Length: 537
Image (cartoon, rainbow, N blue to C red):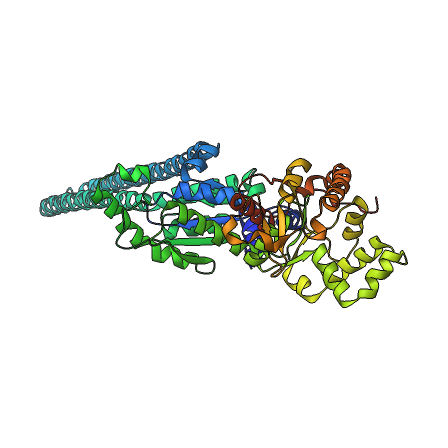
């Protein structure tokens, strides 16, 4: 729905000559950047939105954008404003020219009337002169003619006075109408000034947000839009956030520890006025984004908790609305923490954790003869493993929920075989750790012979286990671990070269919580822009 709306908006805004060619390019761009987060955060003005946006950026990679950023990055705002001013001046000049032409026309009509009046008077006088000559013999008629002439002159004088008064009244009415019209135009100009500025800003925001790096990484709108009108202008210009979050803080703690440094320097009354203005506009804003808005309750939280909670909501929303099922191949030496992290990812996002050792253990328990055949050399170990992993990844739960794969692939050939399956991994991450660090970590691993629980003597406290109940698992024997690490270490350069830009390298020595957040971002972020892997090349 949102994609079709964006395409329609682009058609209206850009007005291309070739619509088919434009739509083809737009569809390619939409497919390439459709997973990029586009977030709008709504909150009272005293909350430190920039800090929250920076935290979300660290998790999602989306860039925070403020109103000042749009103005600074838009190089054409001043030219646009000058063009609008020039258009207004041109329109005003046309109006002035029309008024001048109207005045000249009125003056010309007046002059024509005066000439007609003079001509009429001359004609009357000439007629009276002819009449006087024809009646020279009659004195009475002469006197009567004189009286009639005087009466006519008096009437002409009265008519002239009336005409002058009417012309003066019409000129006064025209001047009053022109003044009234000018006042109305000024009022209309004042009313249209703000929407015009909002429209210009919306167009500039569209141009900035549809350019790199915002188009490549996504964006987070921090302090705009403020009003319903501005939100509508942004939507008409083609700025459509895929997620809108309204932060709802505690009512009692309006100026608590979520307040920004800028708000702390303001007076309490100014903060309350800002909150009052925010409440007046929030309902229309919710209406403008009613299809994508989500309320996030942050009452009782400090800044760190709010940042984590908002980042979590963004990740979960991105994972829930993603058009793909996540399939992550998590590479790394034994001892890098890959299994623990995979279990945490499975618990957080509901994906299936597929571990090679666990799958083989379950298979050998169900089919003991298969293990004997492999040991006797009747079946090739690699072919069996490839078939087992493919069958597991094609199960209904993996197809519907996605998966995180650990312990496999271990070689380049195994990775190519994995890419040839119907559901190859769409995410690849490598836990970067040296073989020495991995060996050091695995040297302390023990398992409880009674409960089967695993412990690490280097990190767990003695209170959680009894040392006499612990033993080394056969799979954790130093010889077995060294062989596995050596095999992967030999193949590591070839795997990295084969994966290319589709591989995400993660530092495995960072704290576990930060490492988990990084892998969560790898799972929920759009896939890296990279050429496809070529298993047959």
